[in-house]
Structure formats: structure tokens, C-alpha cells
Length: 307
Ligand code: 13P
Ligand code: SF4
Image (tube, rainbow, N blue to C red):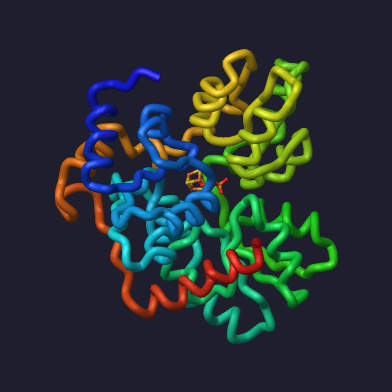
């Protein structure tokens, strides 16, 4: 792999300054190439906690940087582009959830795509790869799942013995894809398998050959004997898969599968972060003591139940 000048500078500076760079799998290939680790949101949170470096630069969206801070309170955590948020993480009102908690016997399950502030009133986090497993292990039949109604419906279908109440949230990127589009894509590429993220609506998920997190989709492709795949998640996965599996063919399920927030972070952002002193570029994530304690408990419960 030949590095560009900017990439070589990043590699040198992160070594000199003992910085760990994390990149979600939706990031551009040139960013993934300079990262110490890339993966889905669960893998990032676990890797971050174990990383020896005292400074972490997160190339992804805000809730991911907050999760790193929650698990590594003594580290300096920088969000490479402070504008990068996840619209779904902001959809649910914390006071509303607190009221539901007071009035019902729910265990409140928060998809990790939530703000640290919202996590303070939830009992346990899940990620798309761990949701079914963790909800199954919860010692309560009554679950309030938030914010993603599609991931929640997927979990509910897998666990009919649980009573799962869903709230009205979802990923605007994945939800935009219709069942008609999925049927058309399958007809256009009849030799392909359709692989989708559980944030897609049920009409799409029902047509899929495989449903999984970003990493689960990547692992499925790498381990498969098949050669053609329609990818039903953010388009960057295709770029990364094409690099890893040059002999396989990939098609995007829809041109709508572009997360503008994930695209905000650029290689120059990463270079500027590693060149600068803390606070000069990107945003250092700070969380108050109360948020640190309550939101961290929610993530620790996920790790406890997920292992
Ligand atoms: P993963 O948990 O699969 O990494 O997904 C995060 C995300 O934002 C999906 O849209
Ligand atoms: Fe959030 Fe959807 Fe973007 Fe993932 S793809 S970061 S859930 S908006």
C-alpha cells in the first residue's frame, strides 16, 4: 500500500505523539488506511478501552467519540470533525424516556447510536451486532427499545417471548430505501446476495439473504464463496470491500445510502488533528461527572451482557 504525503505525515505524527486513530467502517478508505483500528461501533468502543495511547482521535460521529470517552475517562478524546453527528442519536427526548421509566416496569435498552445524555436514563446499550443477544439475556420480559424502530422490530421478531415497545425513531439514511428498490436491485443482479443492515425497514430486511452490522456484513462477504453482492448499508462499505475482495463484485442497494455525517470527516481533518495541540482542531469531548457515571453504567452493562 503506497501512502500519500498526507497519510505518511499522519502515520509519523501519530507515532511521535502516541495518538490512537479510530475509524468507523463507513469512513473513506484513505482514513481507514491511517487508523489503528476500524470496525463497527461495538468493536470501536471495546478497542478504545484497551488502546494503550492516552489520546484518541475518532473518525466517525459524535456518539462514537462520547462512547470512547465514557469507557476511557482518563484519555483525551478528539472528534476529528465536530460537525459530524448522527441524526438518529438526537431523536428521542430524555425527559420523555424518564417519564416512561417512572410509569412502567421497562428495562430501557438504548441503541448505542444515542447521546451520552440520553444514555444516562437507560439501563443497557446494544449495538446492531449485539442487540438480539443482549435483549435475550435481560431478566425482564418488558423492554423499551430506542431509538431505532427498525432494529427494534428486528430484535422483537427474533425474540417473540419478549414484549418490546418501540419508539418512533430511525436512521434517515437506511430508512429511505424501499422494498420496491430492493426488489428492483435483486432483479437487476439475480446472481447476487442481498446483505442489509438492520436499520433498514422490514420490507427490505425480509428480502435479504443476510442481515447484520457493518462488520458482520464485511465478514460475511470475506467468508463467502459467492462472488456478487448487493450491499444494503452505507456506500463506503463497498469501497472497503472492493479493496479487500478485488475479485468480487459489489452493487449498492440504493444511491440513497450515503450518510452525509459520516462523510464530513476528511483526511485533512485527521492531519490537522494530529498536527495540532489539544483544543486547536477537532473537538475535545468533555462530559460532566453525572453523565460519565450514569451513561458509563449503561455501556458497561452492554459489555457485561455481551461477553
Ligand atoms: P454499526 O453498529 O453496524 O457500526 O452501525 C453504526 C451505524 O451508524 C449504522 O448506521
Ligand atoms: Fe446515524 Fe444513520 Fe449515519 Fe449511521 S448511517 S451514523 S445511524 S445517520
